Image 1 (cartoon, helix red, strand yellow):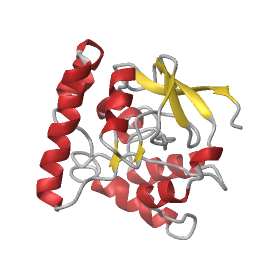
Image 2 (spheres, one colour; image 1 turned 90 degrees about the vertical axis):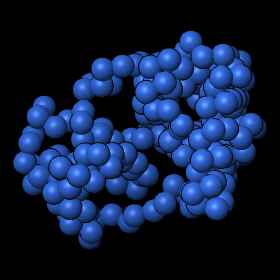
Image 3 (cartoon, one colour; image 1 turned 90 degrees about the horizontal axis):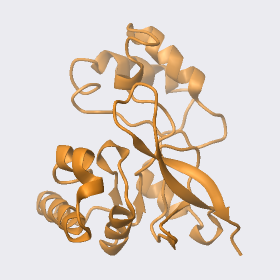
Image 4 (cartoon, helix red, strand yellow; image 1 turned 135 degrees about the vertical axis):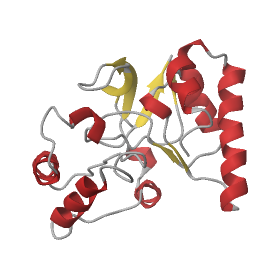
Length: 197
């Protein structure tokens, strides 16, 4: 699930009360449940924006995993002195809107760029947007998928989350920072805050 009102979440999240954040998550869950006939299992914060209230709301809603931050590897998020239950599977690769025109414009060159960013033997998470790769830039996605067909194994985040041993995941602080090509700050995977027992 990707929220109820993307612009409201992305632009106003730090100013929303805990009750308003919970209401956003509840509204989105209700709508998606009505469409799918089942509860969504994962949550992906609009614009990679997080606050302690949003992390708590995602936990309270019972999601099995979240993908709210930009980072390197799965972890349990921590903020405001609290460790949250749902594991975080961060986006590890830049989005097309962050690199288009800065690294390349042609589908083949963009596909090569992404292939060069892949980390072998690691979970590489790429966020795609329906309004870009699903529309006017579908050629970029098609070219990338063709290049990756023999190089990568495609997995669903819900399956990846189910395979995680959450008791062994590191605990990492969630911090706000900047990502090249993105106008607003985003939530980033910070340093590990404590060792797991």
